[in-house]
Length: 426
Ligand code: AMP
Ligand code: GLY
Image 1: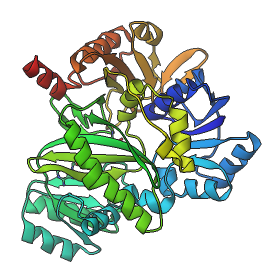
Image 2: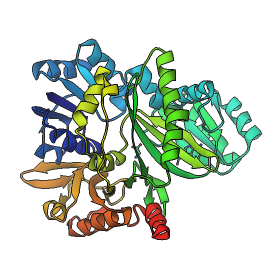
Image 3: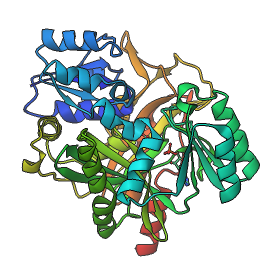
Image 4: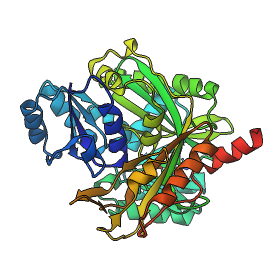
């Protein structure tokens, strides 16, 4: 098969790494790709925002399957355009991608299908939203309805903070994404991520993971795209996974069928494990970044038949096998991230770090004259397997010690919740 992978982050490097191992693959192109993907695939300069350009490329290169990494092209209808052109695609159609693209859309599905989630209201004007805040009290959560690059969620500790957030959103702080807002109950508990594949009819559970969104140790400081992750997440027991499939993911797949837009792709459910069980915080219509990196390390099965089956509607014939080990990834980011940071510094000693038995997935890098140069905020994902999360953590941090990149930094406590649990149980 000839495969085109859309994206340039650590998530896409991990997908490319796993796809490239498949004996089914003849060629793998990445658009635009990054410095790590250049080693295992052909990076192509393609305007992925232009559906016509992507289709033309696929026809020219006889692409059999397009795998879409990030959410924006999906919410923008790339999967629809490819399907109309007769090209198989992994990733939901535009209407189905609203599960991520519109928080209000997802909350309404939860209400209609009895899916456990935070109580909420949807508002198109500030006064009504403020009245709801007054009625409910703080803490309370204010969210821009649309895609806001992970920044459209304000956890308001006071009613004043909530009303300010509402005013900001309606004043255009998040552009189009804030034309409507969702105000919802603050959920208490531990967060976990759950992933499942879907071909529209069959839902195949994949695995659990836990991300670290805050930039600083001890979960302090501003939120980022994710500073590290591990899988599986011991906070989710097997029974809880079954409960999430039964009460959250399967009813969502049913809802999408009922709406006439069967969901094909990956369900990424962000969950809060509350004292009364798992509740849905949000859906994403793509793999998590950096959660994907740990999932790919643990995945024993060939990923290509799974992605193809989602596109073709044959997932019922597929199973999935995992390595017994835990996986953990630590993000190396440019100093200053998630605020402003410098680009263009050299990164050395990646190969010696990998030689210690880890996998280094690239995010914001490019290769120039044999040098590896940092080009983004999140730059590398140092990823290891271990018999425990504690062991995987030790391996990842030993490899980081080998990498020579003075302009970078990382959290020093990725995996702390699982490590603490492992200490108690040992
Ligand atoms: P989201 O973009 O919806 O994932 O929200 C970003 C982060 O805000 C989540 O990962 C949670 O940490 C937090 N969050 C969102 N909704 C809630 C909620 N209802 N209660 C508590 N925390 C929330
Ligand atoms: N790591 C969180 C996300 O991909 O949304």
